[in-house]
Length: 83
Image (cartoon, rainbow, N blue to C red; front, top):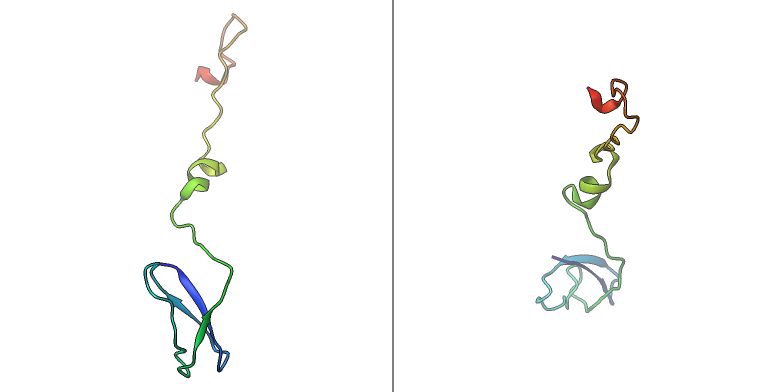
């Protein structure tokens, strides 16, 4: 649910209210009972879980490069894939 910020027009009290999109906006200050107005504030968000960075872009989770097949035509004893 979104968090909205309001400011009282009487006492300048600033407070936050967690509301559903379908809820009516707050109309009364909890401190003095005065009229409030909704403020435009910077939205914040939180990424929970591993998400796209942890799943696909993190160096800890990256897959090692696949070695190319030996093209020397001889023995592959020195190739990394020979083990």
